[in-house]
Length: 496
Ligand SMILES: Cc1ncc(COP(=O)(O)O)c(C=O)c1O
Image (cartoon, rainbow, N blue to C red; front, side, top):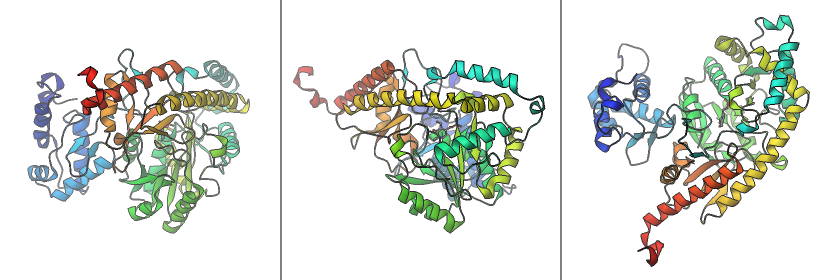
């Protein structure tokens, strides 16, 4: 619960500069560390600061006290505060621009991994944030029929406590599907049912921790909420830049991490498909440092055949833990996924699944297996992919009509990565767009290294064609309004 002394309702003008400064000034009162504990002070301070954000002592956009001031107020070494701020920036809680103040990140509190805050939108607000598939296209009648068959056909003995890795039928069907569609080296013995990629990542992080890993490298840019969820797995994160070929393996080697999470097929959010050369370098790095790679294959089903490389895990089953889910192919709400943990992590991964929840619900596993085995799942994927390709072409056409915008984002997935002209502030464009009634993600909110030029991430999976067209129209109006206020003379004499 929020502290009543600084509750939103009792704080005059909570969003004003004075409100922000008042909250930041009283911050030290809410933070504490236990010097008798053997947990590092910066780790304790990090947790205390997260608590302050969660309890709304600190709100999105608030400026943090300088590390020197906070260190003085808390009687800590400045390096302790620097370390805690750096970690929270790496996790996406704070944003730190070089040579400028550190702030509480805007727009991601209480968010879903799919892409930030999913509060009920104001009427008529068009949501073009990336991360969601076409929810209206969820195959309700297929899923209902598969569930009915599952309830009817599931053997009585399978209603008991099962192997937490999943029902043999599910594992066998998923293994065959992954071998065929992604070249994943999988058998019914190596597949583990999960509740989605996020759970797979958590189980992998716990297994990595159990086998002695002390930090986890992640790609930058990255979905800010996912970054935070990864950080909650307990390993400190190190951000490693992504370029046009995928993760920068030289920077990864310098990071000191021996474990990394990558979105090789379709980097989130840039859409870059990791090149064959970069994959080879990444696998060589893993061999050199005795490292582990976690492959988040969140959207590989939706990619042009000519750009589709087999999963990174193909041929490297000892180095790569493969993760996938039905979140983009069916719907995130189904919460069904699969993992193929790497050889060295397999035992710990299964133990963590047992500890987490003792396995997935049996009927969901059977229903999914029946859907795949009947070929209906694949037909649904083909129909959805055709729809997405068409909508993607529409989105590209509409966005490219804006002068100076460069549309990218690979050839698949469910979103585009749009580069704005240099000097344009993408967060300002996103804020103006919201005022116009359309929500998009600013690239700056997805990077902690700040190495990307200004970008917008725009999802085309969920909206209808009409919503997409209207959303882009509003976005362009918002951008034009900003440009006009920055260069009023550009409007010409008639508006004077
Ligand atoms: C890169 C990435 N990985 C994973 C996820 C979440 O996957 P799941 O719903 O399978 O947990 C998302 C959600 O949008 C994502 O963008």
